[in-house]
Length: 305
Image (spheres, rainbow, N blue to C red):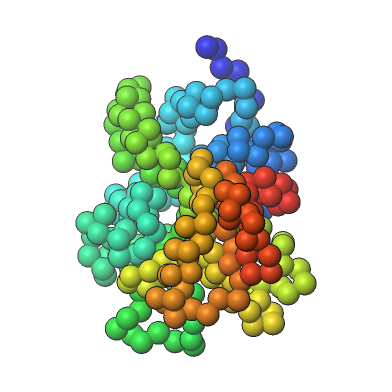
């Protein structure tokens, strides 16, 4: 079908300096691309967020990606290359971050770079405001050095994460107008690609929902054996622990039990559990809601905008 789109203006460096905060980016994206369907908004934010794209909701997202990104490869490439100087090392690490679990050492392994070169590149990417470095939340004031888990590296722009995950690694075919490899790569990986951004926006949602006992810090908890999506502290000293699930299946009570078991293994004494799920919850899990368990869905993201 013929695609008609409004003009998209791109300026990656300026955009990231202006909107480093994921909440501001989400709000800006919604103002520019309003819609009643929160799932459709989020699905497109994962791809186009952080930059000045105008999206059309009557189009399938695959069509929009082809028209706005793949067919305009040279334009995007020129802008992004100006930011990264087209350095293969930086691009390899950015792809490693985009397609992995975000842990720094995992990204280095995927990029096949040694730690010294990797750390130098990370410092440069942080300076460029392409990524930020996040330390794991901890229960005490310091880690025992030998047991300190790897920091995580997080993209500041959803679009740049998408670019380095799906476009940059296979640019040759895309540049030549052959999108078949991209389509295969995207189809095989898109299901879980929104998880990280869903988690980031879940942090912002929880901040809004705990006004009476304000959240003073929030992030993920992880060590060598366990990873917990949400680990937060409130002004009164309470510990909030939670999980985010960007899946089409309703979340069952077993997910709460799993979370409680992880807390026991990590020796975390949680005052409250929270679960943020795209598709909602089973009746059994909803019956457990109360002071000790809070449940949120994608529909609650409307509070952010």
